[in-house]
Every structure is written in structure tokens, then in C-alpha cells.
Amino acid sequence: MPKGIYKHKKLTNEVKSKISNSLKGNTNRLGTKAWNKGLTVESDIRVRNYVSNTAKTNKGKECKLQTKKKLSMFYTGEKEFTEFKTPEYKRRRNIKDFKWRKKVRDRDVVCQITGKKTKCLVHHLEGYMQRPDLRYDVSNGVLILEEMHKKFHIEFGTRSFTKEDFLKFKEANKNG
View 1 (cartoon, rainbow, N blue to C red):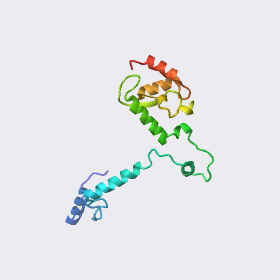
View 2: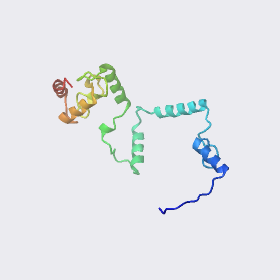
View 3: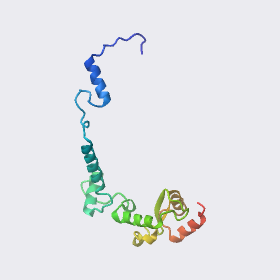
View 4: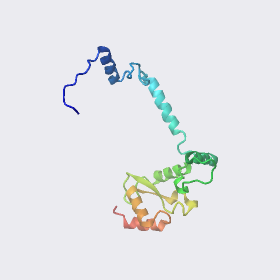
């Protein structure tokens, strides 16, 4: 950049006022009131409640197969439905799954290996894909630490593991 003295035009009081107001957040650059300013406490709470309630309405709800197919076509951009692109074990976020996890968490409360309460995950004793008949059986679930969960699946894999594998793992990692 060239060296030298730069002379700027002096700002008028009107321009200074507009800049000051826009920096305060009262108006936009044009000097008009911003769209979200001037909300009363009641209207702000109403808007916040409306947004939070509408966001929670579909969480964990089971939707029809036809709806799932339409959503799949929408996201893939295909004209006709041929097959789901995501494997079943990744599509399993449904109400049964949420209820099963909650029941296991309520029953166990702490990690069944270390006894710690934080960062726990619900783990299937018999593989999810291996035993579909036991997927939502509470006795087939156990609460374990996230790091223990990763360690278990590194040692025994993610597809074919049994309750006996978990008991061996538990015995070997009792001290955490």
C-alpha cells in the first residue's frame, strides 16, 4: 500500500447517528428498525416455546414405510423407489429403540464394568443384527462406559458377539 496521508471526507452528524444506532442493534444500515428488535418478553417466550415444541413433536415417533420411502426418494433425488441406501442397523432410530434404551438406563444406572455414572452407553449383549428376536428385550441390554464400549467392539467386532463374550470382557476389565 502506498505511503502518504489520506484525506477522508468528514462524516455528517446524520451518518454518525445511523452508524451509532446500527452498532447498538436498534436499526439496520438503512436506519429502519431491525425485524427482530422490539419484541416484548411475552412474544419472545411465545416464539421460543412454539419453536421448541414443534422441534420435539416427531422425535422418536415411528413413521410409515411409505413415508420412509418418500423421504428416501427426496434425499437421493430418484424418481422411483428401488431400495434403502442406508443399512438397517443405521435406520433403527425408532420409538422401540428409544424406549428400550430408557428401560435399560433406568435399570442399570451405572456402568456394569467400572461402576461409573458418566458417559455411559446402552450395549446389546447378543448382537443387534445377529439376534433380531432379542433386539428390544431389556435383559439383552447392559449399560457400559463409552470407552469400554469402543474397546469391546474393537476386541470382539461389531457383528457377531455373544453374552459370553461380554462376560469374558467384563472379567478382564473389572478394574477399568
